[in-house]
Image (tube, rainbow, N blue to C red; front, side, top):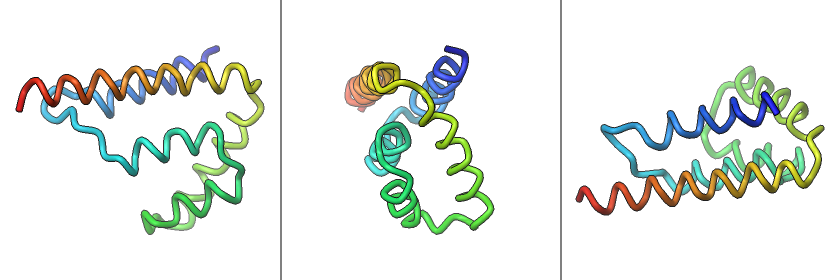
Length: 96
């Protein structure tokens, strides 16, 4: 439970910051991949960001911990991230 709450708070901080609430589509896709994609597919997905190898390995280590959560919990987290992203997009459209 603590990991899921932490991930949700990080998502809220990154997506719903008052100065810029628009969510990059690549970031939204990466969030879902982080939860639901296989290690190989997720590694391919994040390679497009050209991050240093150490950063990629650190992210993969965290993903391995997240992968230990049950599928039901992962889907629930993904559902809440979807709600957060939708609210961020609605806020952004209202303030254009």
